[in-house]
Each structure stands twice: as C-alpha cells, then as structure tokens.
Image (tube, helix red, strand yellow):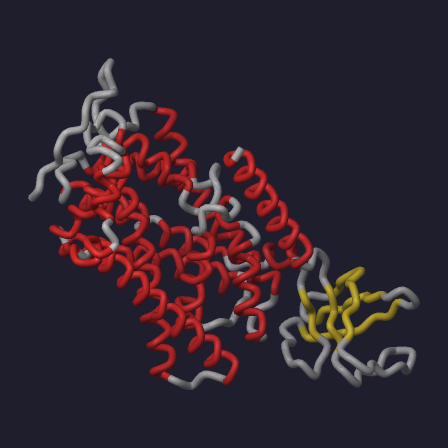
Length: 402
C-alpha cells in the first residue's frame, strides 16, 4: 500500500513538473511594447503589452508582423534591443535553443566529464577506510551505472539504490556497503552546501550588487549556512556517546538483535567516527564536483543569452540541485528545479523564463549523454563490486577497524 502511494505521489509530482514547464515556456516569438508606445493606428499603449510574432524579415533589423485579436501591424526593432523603454523581442523556446552558442555548449559538456571520476574516487575512499578494498575501476563502472539509473528513478539520487545493492551483494559486509553509499551521498550534499555558502559569502564581500540581487544572495547564504550548522550538529549529536546514552539509542538497538539490518547500519555509521580525515576529504572532494556541474550549467545559460554573473549562479544553482535531490522529486527534479530557478532568478531581468528552463534542459541533456555510457556499462554485465558465488547469502564479516 505504501509503495503504491509513493508511486502515485511521484507520478503526480512528475505531471505537475512537466505541466509547469509547458505553461512557463513561451513557445512562440513575441514582441514586448513599452508603456507609451504609439501603434501605427495612433493608439498609445497604457501598459507594457505583448504581441505574438507572425513573420520576421531582414537580418540586421527584425521586422516583425505582430497581431492581437483585432489588428495586424509591422514594426522594426533592433535585433539586440533590451532597453525597457523600447520595443524588444522575446524569443520563443525554439528560437532560444536555435540561437545557442555551440562553443559554450561544448565547453559545458566537457566540464561535466571530470564529475564522474571524482565521484567514484570519493566513494572509493569511503569504502577503503572501512575495509572494502575494491578496484577503482569497478567503483567507476558502478558510478556510471548509478548515473544511468538516476534517469529511471525519482530525484537525482535513484542511482544510489542501485549502487548500494550491487555494492552489498556478495560483499559479506552489507551494512558497511550500504552505509558507504549513504555517506557518499551525505558528503556530496555537504560539498554542495559549502560551495553555495562560500560563493554567497564571496558575492557579499565583493559587493557591487543591486538591491534585489543582494537580498537574494544574502537570504540564500544565511539559509545555506544555517542548514550546514544544523546538519553538522545533527551528525555530531548522533555520533556522541553521551547523547546516545541519554536517549538510550544503543539500548533500543540492542533489542533488535545483533543481526538486525538497522543494527548493522548503525555500527557501520558509528565506525566512521574513526575516520574523520576521510569524511573531511570526501566533503572537500565534492566541491569540485558541484563546481564543474554548476559552471557547466552556467555556460549553458550564457550560451542561451543569459547575462547572470557566475558568482550568483554558483550561489543559487547548488540550492536548485539540492531541491532536485529530494527522493520524492520527479526524475532529475523535472519541474521542481525549474520552478525554483525561475522563482529565484527571473526577477534579475538578466534572464527570461525560456532561458532559465532551457538552461536546465541543456544541463540534463549533458548528463543524459554521459548516462548512455552507464547504459553501455550495464549492458556489459558483471557490475557487482565483488565476485559473485552460487551462494550470495554469505554471513556478514566484521570489517577492518583501521
């Protein structure tokens, strides 16, 4: 019953997300006329008005045939006009994508490439410190398979379920394997939070921001660092022997028996207290991962004509990616991430909704391109981290304490 409800919720969220994108995008080119503009028939616009484009002529000057319900007229506007007191073109989604800068898109695609080896290295370190000695190549293969499954399961974390399954099967250390994936995701999110927090502080320190941008960066930075402090405090409290005694956590777990899966997970999680250096290193390693993805997304936005500063994007995009990582979110955060990026960046007037949503669409296309490699890896078979035997139900082994 719970599984059915979960599936229904995910389908509803996916439908809402797709519906939001469909209704947010402008599918056809439009002309925006400012207040006080005199139309050919002598009528003066009393408010900013939008007219759909019927035809376009001339390369240097855009001659647009615009229409409303009652009339048609032709006006000429400069191709690159952006002044709010002048007529200006608002391209539709097709025009926006067609006019993208290919060189910037290719550079963005290339920036995504280092993400996956770094992610594999982060997970590999977290496994090795707990006694799971596996070749880096296998960790890399399963990372790519997890990327492929991110497009088949909710949120941007669906591949973690697959990674945990194939890492645990045949390892004899199921709890350690599953917890390595959980800590891999946790340190990844910690790096994401740190990137946004540091970028926000640098933006505020440099100054020279308009009032709206300053307020946005300030609010995001405050919330990001508050979340970071709360998350760090939660981890410290969970691992604190004193707190565990007060809430009698160990006593509650002991009632489940030593072979209960939750007990093994708790043992594996608590064991990471002996490896603080690895946890810190894994969190720091995560920062270039998210930096590459955020900059690749920013390049996609610039390729589509956005004028937003890199510092602002590095502050906002991690928050957008974080929203897309929620397990109940539709695959790749469709709709959720789009709504948030439009809500946060549209008021800047340096990007329109088409550009913002198209930017995320291009980012997802980047990932799909690399996810195809994960699909090929999966088709090759044998993606387990450990050799499989006829009896995969071997008893758990105690991991190394070093």
